[in-house]
Image (cartoon, rainbow, N blue to C red; front, side, top):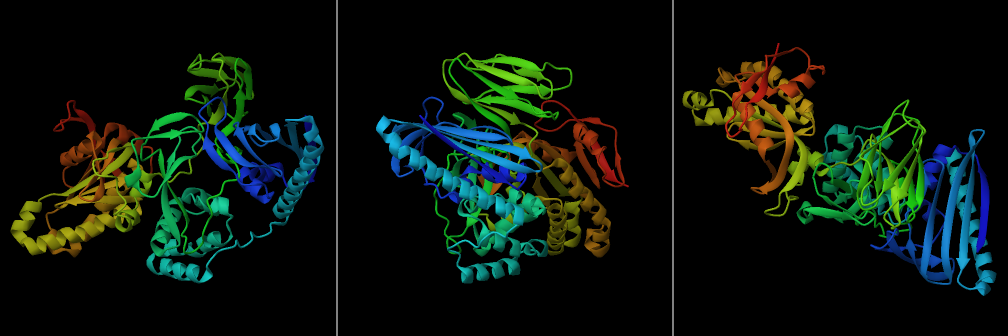
Length: 591
């Protein structure tokens, strides 16, 4: 066995260095290490079989999951199947030093034959020198704040033309971000450019998430970016598959990393990602790592649980929601609270021996294997804010529905949405309107009222799904946003009537409801069906002129939100057609 290590005194903070070094895909490229070809490995604790180079030697190995403690250390073991080496272990540890950081990088190798030690030792020294050079270069860049370099292969003429097309077509608030996106395309390294996540980019820019999502959609229309759909594992939250269109979605997904099969829900398991259009910049599909800590920012710690062995986890000091996840799908929740035990022991068979673990802040949780099978276990932070722009949220953008109307589910497919907020509106006295004003004038009024409703819906992050006669069905991410849009419609209605003499005696009636439903392709567009849709439509049918009807549960939530001057009726049992039990409903009006 040969082991070598180096300690690099760095000037950057531990937080900043962890952010870069834990992004092992980026770091391995920076250190000029060899690319990898990965194949899933369904056996044992390993997740992938990797073909690559170990120094000058071609090798194939089983890559075990990375082990880490957030912000402090990480490591990985590679069990070589073919090659001159039996196994390799890599360990990286960051230690604070008076506001700066010491980075210790250690490699341990077991040669297959003793004679190879004469070759492997110098090879190991050469690799460590590469690593040290890369870490020093990263440290210098972090401390100096040096701007990112312009990457190779960007076609500046095509980039400028596509940028101009974007600015000419996009709303002003979106067009204002165009130059930042152009800079991102020109400077982002290949590994990051292959998967632009709009909400992550918005958070990094300090910009509005919906604006950046709309920017990326508009950029796809202009030829700057390409839209793809990622099927996201509910545990590791990395992409288990990348698809060019929604039509290619299946009913379920499988994550090789977690050995977990899961249902595909459009508001949880499918997210929009983007990459530069090939005509602007070709991004090679090359991997340099199987996945380190940066790929799973919600994971506090990950460890290999050996067969009949133990793994130790230290719960963070902060009171938050956590859980343990074992490869294959076993989970248990961790409730962190003062006064709970400081040392907890749990056993893991096909499932954990308890559904809930109570632990004190900073407590040690020991997991013991009872299956005789090695697998990795993660301590996950459940309160972590997702940066996934889900397919359902994308579908609530008017830009998407207007410019990507061709991107729909395959015929006959029905994809579940865990929670959709739906608004239905209708016009009162519309029959009399047609009789009184005639078809042409009535039709013109209905179209003008659609413009009013569309503006309110878009202003509150919703999109019209369809119009049915003089009624509207709209979708929102959140039901409070749907109610805000409805209130804006009601408040604008008197002025609309004053400007349209034919609208005299006509009023809005609105219903809002949120719950699970299914997305389908109907009449060539993305539509929704299910009991939630029925309830939203039936609540609208309960509304009188100038009213929004919601459930009592939603009304209770609304009372804690600043909606301006509104009034609530007493809850009453609404008998809704097609609904077996009465629904407790509340009428909401403006004052």
